[in-house]
Image (cartoon, rainbow, N blue to C red; front, side, top):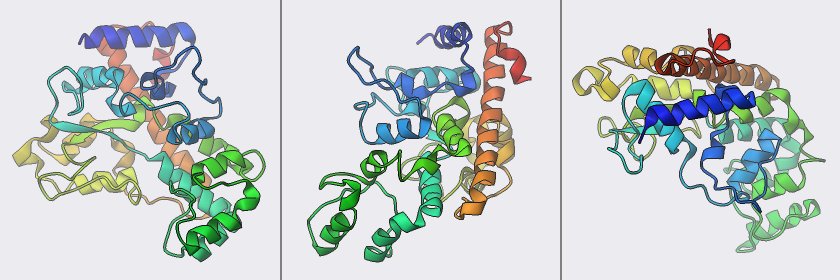
Length: 304
C-alpha cells in the first residue's frame, strides 16, 4: 500500500479540520460508520465503554493494527505488524501501551468502593468492575443480580452496561478531567507501538515474556523486555534494549512505576500517563511531518 500517500492524506485532513494528530482517535479507523450508525459519544469515557459493549458494532480489526497505523509504523520504523492485511507481515506485534480498562478499573475501585462492596462480599477474590455478565446460573450469581437490581440491572447485562445505565447519577466522578483525558488518549498515536513478536499475544519465543496489561503498567512491561537478548536476536532492528527505547520514543517509561490504586493517587498517576502519551505522540507526528515534507501544517510548530 502507498504508506506515504495514506499518512499524508491523514495529516492534511487533520490540518484542514483543526485536529491535532496526536489526539486523533483511531477508533474512527476500525468501525464502519453507516448513515444509520450511532455517532461516537462526545464523552471519551462513555465512548470506550460503549465500544467495549459493542454499541458501535464489531471493529474490522484492532485499532493498533488499522491500515492507517500500519502505514505509520512503516514510515517510522520500516515494518508492519504481524497482523497487516495484504502486505508482507512484520515479525513483530502491535501493542496498546497503556491499557485504559485497567486504569479505569482501578479508578472506579478507588472512587466507588461502597458501590462495589456487595460484589466484593459475594466474590471476595474477584476484581470489580470487570467484563463479566450478570446471570442466574447459581446462588451467588442470583444474589449479585438481586443486590444490584435497584440499579436496573438485568440478566445478561455486563458491568459496563450497569455503569453506563447509572453513569449520570452514580458515576459522575468518571467525568474527572484526567480520566477523561486518559480515555481520549487511549487509542491515539502516542499509545501505540511495535514489540517483539508474541509479546502482545502468546508470549515471546525467548523467555516467554508477555504484556500483561491487567497487572503491569507500560513501564513494567518495558522493563520485562530488557530481559531479552537484543544483541543476538536484533528485535525490530535494535541490538540493545536502550536502542529500542530510543528508537521507539520510550524515554518517559524507562523509570518503573505502578498503577495507582488509592483515591488520593489517581490524579497524579493519570497526569503522568497522559503527559507521556501526548509527548510521544508529538514526537511521532514531528517525525512523520519531517519524513513527508509537511512542516507547514498548523500543528507542526506544537511538536517542537
